Amino acid sequence: MNQSSSQSSTRKPIGIFKKVAGTFCHYCPVCSYGRKNPDSLIGKIVHHPLHANNCPAWKAEKELYQSVRD
Image (cartoon, rainbow, N blue to C red):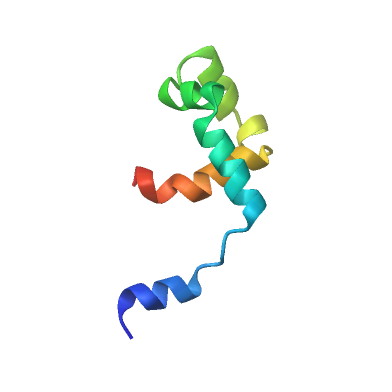
């Protein structure tokens, strides 16, 4: 068994809600601005633990697009 198939079998499938929410957050102009400018007011708000730990769309975006950023 090759490495890629063993990795894909251990990953949990991503649900449709998580895909929709993550995609919405990824293309949201406010969230995009906050990710690109973390020292701005908007960036501080979206990266603040109150938002980052409780927003399902933000969490889904991080999970969906993490591999793209690495």
